[in-house]
Amino acid sequence: MERKFITYFEQEGNDYTDDLIRAVKDKLDKSPDIKRILIASSTGESALKLYGAIDDKNIEIVNVTHHMGFKEENVADISDEMIDKLEDVGIKTFIGSHAFSGAARGVTNKYGGYSPLDIVADTLRMFSHGVKVSAEISIMAADAGLIPVGEKIIAIGGRGHGVDTAVILTPVNAKDLFNLKFHEIIAMPKD
Image: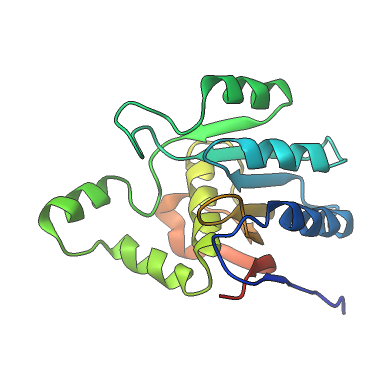
Protein backbone atom coordinates (compact mmCIF):
# COMPACT_ATOMS: atom_id res chain seq x y z
CA MET A 1 0.00 0.00 0.00
CA GLU A 2 1.31 3.43 -0.98
CA ARG A 3 1.54 5.92 1.88
CA LYS A 4 -0.14 9.16 0.93
CA PHE A 5 0.67 12.44 2.58
CA ILE A 6 -1.34 15.63 2.56
CA THR A 7 0.38 19.01 2.60
CA TYR A 8 -1.38 21.29 5.07
CA PHE A 9 -1.22 25.08 5.05
CA GLU A 10 -1.91 27.19 8.15
CA GLN A 11 -5.01 29.03 6.94
CA GLU A 12 -7.08 29.44 3.81
CA GLY A 13 -6.93 32.55 1.71
CA ASN A 14 -3.20 33.03 1.95
CA ASP A 15 -1.09 32.73 -1.15
CA TYR A 16 0.48 29.27 -0.92
CA THR A 17 0.78 28.99 -4.69
CA ASP A 18 4.48 28.09 -4.84
CA ASP A 19 4.23 25.43 -2.12
CA LEU A 20 1.05 24.03 -3.63
CA ILE A 21 2.62 23.78 -7.08
CA ARG A 22 5.55 21.84 -5.57
CA ALA A 23 3.10 19.41 -3.94
CA VAL A 24 1.22 18.98 -7.25
CA LYS A 25 4.48 18.43 -9.12
CA ASP A 26 5.51 15.74 -6.61
CA LYS A 27 2.12 14.04 -7.02
CA LEU A 28 2.38 14.15 -10.83
CA ASP A 29 5.78 12.43 -10.61
CA LYS A 30 4.08 9.54 -8.77
CA SER A 31 0.88 9.51 -10.85
CA PRO A 32 1.64 8.87 -14.54
CA ASP A 33 -2.05 8.24 -15.27
CA ILE A 34 -2.99 11.89 -14.59
CA LYS A 35 -2.76 13.97 -17.75
CA ARG A 36 -4.91 17.01 -16.94
CA ILE A 37 -4.88 19.80 -14.37
CA LEU A 38 -7.63 22.36 -13.79
CA ILE A 39 -6.73 25.51 -11.94
CA ALA A 40 -8.97 28.30 -10.70
CA SER A 41 -7.08 31.49 -11.45
CA SER A 42 -9.12 34.64 -11.88
CA THR A 43 -6.22 36.64 -13.35
CA GLY A 44 -4.33 33.73 -14.94
CA GLU A 45 -1.16 34.38 -12.92
CA SER A 46 -1.36 31.13 -10.94
CA ALA A 47 -2.06 29.15 -14.12
CA LEU A 48 1.02 30.63 -15.78
CA LYS A 49 3.12 29.89 -12.69
CA LEU A 50 1.85 26.28 -12.69
CA TYR A 51 2.80 25.88 -16.35
CA GLY A 52 6.32 27.17 -15.67
CA ALA A 53 6.84 24.63 -12.90
CA ILE A 54 5.50 21.52 -14.65
CA ASP A 55 8.26 19.76 -16.58
CA ASP A 56 5.93 17.41 -18.43
CA LYS A 57 4.55 19.39 -21.34
CA ASN A 58 2.17 16.49 -22.07
CA ILE A 59 0.10 17.60 -19.09
CA GLU A 60 -2.89 19.60 -20.25
CA ILE A 61 -3.69 22.65 -18.11
CA VAL A 62 -7.06 24.41 -18.20
CA ASN A 63 -7.56 27.72 -16.40
CA VAL A 64 -11.01 28.51 -15.01
CA THR A 65 -11.72 32.14 -14.17
CA HIS A 66 -14.72 34.06 -12.89
CA HIS A 67 -17.68 34.74 -15.15
CA MET A 68 -18.00 38.08 -16.90
CA GLY A 69 -19.35 40.72 -14.53
CA PHE A 70 -18.16 38.94 -11.37
CA LYS A 71 -16.83 42.22 -9.95
CA GLU A 72 -17.99 44.76 -12.53
CA GLU A 73 -20.57 44.60 -15.32
CA ASN A 74 -19.16 43.63 -18.73
CA VAL A 75 -15.65 43.21 -17.33
CA ALA A 76 -13.61 40.00 -16.99
CA ASP A 77 -11.16 39.50 -14.13
CA ILE A 78 -8.64 38.16 -16.63
CA SER A 79 -7.16 40.40 -19.32
CA ASP A 80 -7.18 39.61 -23.01
CA GLU A 81 -3.39 39.84 -22.91
CA MET A 82 -3.20 37.14 -20.22
CA ILE A 83 -5.59 34.89 -22.16
CA ASP A 84 -3.26 35.27 -25.17
CA LYS A 85 -0.20 34.46 -23.01
CA LEU A 86 -1.89 31.35 -21.67
CA GLU A 87 -2.99 30.25 -25.14
CA ASP A 88 0.58 30.75 -26.42
CA VAL A 89 1.75 28.01 -24.02
CA GLY A 90 -1.26 25.77 -24.65
CA ILE A 91 -3.46 26.67 -21.68
CA LYS A 92 -7.15 27.06 -22.44
CA THR A 93 -9.16 29.52 -20.35
CA PHE A 94 -12.81 29.03 -19.42
CA ILE A 95 -14.99 32.03 -18.57
CA GLY A 96 -18.53 31.07 -17.61
CA SER A 97 -21.19 30.76 -14.95
CA HIS A 98 -20.28 29.14 -11.67
CA ALA A 99 -21.70 25.64 -11.32
CA PHE A 100 -22.81 26.12 -7.71
CA SER A 101 -24.35 29.57 -8.05
CA GLY A 102 -24.99 30.84 -11.59
CA ALA A 103 -28.55 32.05 -12.18
CA ALA A 104 -29.69 30.61 -8.83
CA ARG A 105 -27.65 33.36 -7.14
CA GLY A 106 -29.72 35.97 -8.98
CA VAL A 107 -32.90 34.42 -7.61
CA THR A 108 -31.66 34.23 -4.01
CA ASN A 109 -30.22 37.77 -4.22
CA LYS A 110 -33.65 39.09 -5.21
CA TYR A 111 -36.00 36.89 -3.18
CA GLY A 112 -33.86 35.53 -0.37
CA GLY A 113 -33.70 31.94 0.72
CA TYR A 114 -31.24 29.46 -0.64
CA SER A 115 -30.69 27.14 -3.55
CA PRO A 116 -30.05 23.41 -3.09
CA LEU A 117 -26.65 24.10 -4.68
CA ASP A 118 -25.88 26.48 -1.80
CA ILE A 119 -26.11 23.43 0.48
CA VAL A 120 -23.73 21.47 -1.75
CA ALA A 121 -21.26 24.39 -1.83
CA ASP A 122 -21.42 24.96 1.92
CA THR A 123 -20.94 21.25 2.61
CA LEU A 124 -17.77 21.22 0.50
CA ARG A 125 -16.58 24.43 2.21
CA MET A 126 -16.62 22.45 5.48
CA PHE A 127 -13.37 20.93 4.17
CA SER A 128 -12.09 24.18 2.64
CA HIS A 129 -13.16 26.83 0.19
CA GLY A 130 -10.61 25.38 -2.23
CA VAL A 131 -12.24 21.93 -2.08
CA LYS A 132 -15.54 23.56 -3.10
CA VAL A 133 -13.80 25.47 -5.90
CA SER A 134 -12.05 22.33 -7.15
CA ALA A 135 -15.34 20.46 -7.47
CA GLU A 136 -17.08 23.45 -9.04
CA ILE A 137 -14.46 24.13 -11.71
CA SER A 138 -14.35 20.45 -12.64
CA ILE A 139 -18.09 20.51 -13.37
CA MET A 140 -17.79 23.78 -15.28
CA ALA A 141 -14.92 22.51 -17.45
CA ALA A 142 -16.64 19.16 -18.06
CA ASP A 143 -19.88 20.88 -19.10
CA ALA A 144 -17.89 23.09 -21.48
CA GLY A 145 -16.23 20.02 -23.05
CA LEU A 146 -12.76 21.13 -21.95
CA ILE A 147 -12.07 17.94 -19.98
CA PRO A 148 -13.55 14.47 -20.28
CA VAL A 149 -15.72 13.01 -17.54
CA GLY A 150 -14.74 9.70 -15.98
CA GLU A 151 -10.99 10.39 -15.97
CA LYS A 152 -8.95 11.32 -12.88
CA ILE A 153 -7.58 14.86 -12.92
CA ILE A 154 -5.97 17.26 -10.51
CA ALA A 155 -8.14 20.26 -9.64
CA ILE A 156 -6.66 23.30 -7.90
CA GLY A 157 -8.55 26.06 -6.11
CA GLY A 158 -8.36 28.48 -3.26
CA ARG A 159 -9.81 31.59 -1.74
CA GLY A 160 -8.57 35.09 -2.21
CA HIS A 161 -5.14 35.53 -3.76
CA GLY A 162 -3.34 32.49 -5.13
CA VAL A 163 -4.29 28.87 -4.53
CA ASP A 164 -4.20 26.67 -1.43
CA THR A 165 -5.98 23.41 -2.33
CA ALA A 166 -5.31 20.57 -4.76
CA VAL A 167 -7.28 17.36 -5.09
CA ILE A 168 -7.46 14.35 -7.36
CA LEU A 169 -11.02 13.84 -8.51
CA THR A 170 -13.07 12.33 -11.30
CA PRO A 171 -15.22 15.07 -12.85
CA VAL A 172 -18.81 14.75 -13.99
CA ASN A 173 -21.29 16.89 -15.86
CA ALA A 174 -23.60 19.03 -13.72
CA LYS A 175 -26.53 16.68 -14.33
CA ASP A 176 -24.54 13.94 -12.56
CA LEU A 177 -23.36 16.10 -9.63
CA PHE A 178 -23.54 13.39 -6.98
CA ASN A 179 -21.40 11.01 -9.03
CA LEU A 180 -18.37 13.32 -8.69
CA LYS A 181 -15.63 11.40 -6.86
CA PHE A 182 -12.86 12.81 -4.72
CA HIS A 183 -9.95 10.37 -4.63
CA GLU A 184 -7.22 12.20 -2.80
CA ILE A 185 -6.39 15.51 -1.17
CA ILE A 186 -2.93 16.64 -2.21
CA ALA A 187 -2.92 19.90 -0.22
CA MET A 188 -5.35 22.06 1.70
CA PRO A 189 -5.45 24.62 4.52
CA LYS A 190 -5.92 23.42 8.10
CA ASP A 191 -8.06 26.39 9.09
